Image (cartoon, rainbow, N blue to C red; front, side, top):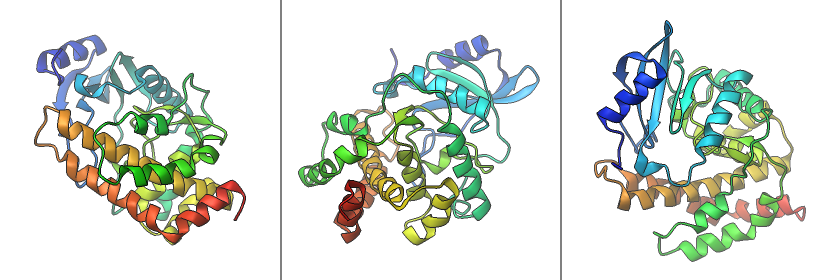
Amino acid sequence: MTALVTDHMLAEVLEAAGITDAVAGPDALASPSYLALESRSVFGMRDGQRVFMKVMHPEMRGGFDLAAAMALATAAGDAGAGPCVVWSEGAAIAMQAVNGGPARHSTLQDAAFMRAAMGSLKRLHGCPALAGRFDPYAQIEAMTDLPEDAPWIFALLDSIREPLMAAPTVPCRNDGSSSNLMTNGLLVDYDRAGMNDPMYDVGALLAEMTDFEEDMRPAFAAYGGTEADFARARLWSIVDDVLHGLWARGHGKTSVRRAVEWLKYSEWRLMRARMQLSHPQFELKARTIRGTA
């Protein structure tokens, strides 16, 4: 099978979904924002309404639970956390197009946007349970292209593994990229869907909104939680940075799309993780989630 979705493959999916008047979606972009890396997408018309459809590239499908992704995307639409899904099959999904497009970094700290995005997360986390657990630690351990300081990174992540993984789980999207947030606060892209600690989603989103914890507090308050929950959210964001950093680093070696800045994106995520792992607050947060602070 070809590594990327070809014109012929896309045409077959469009016909199966009953989508006409297709116009190409965004091109793949790793830096400065994570956008359209896994899939080829189009905007089109279906039954008189404008829709957005994406088809995951064959080279990107390893490691994703597509059945869970489609199930959570559908549930999120029903719950008002994301756009309504109108069709899905295999690695393809079509949903109602959202006016306004994806959020930009300039809007992420807007108070109304923060409340809307956290409200969407709250509704998502109330969706019916999924069959499988999303285990970021297992995914990190499966990575083979590692930086020189990987033993140091892994040792610190392992020191917080038990209390993080022991938290109660809910359906999560496990993705905080701003390109997967709409300007009205709705959530899109559930490729990493699985049961997980809700603070994983909260932490990944907070880290995308701002670098400063003081500025994260209003958004966290909009979701709600204890100081221990906030500590878990911040620690999960480090795990998420390492996961995405190593994931992009690996695809920089294997992807046929050589023009995509995989390594630049990888180094940014790993740099942010290293900064947090080196910060004095890391140990305080680790003690907080263990109940020994």
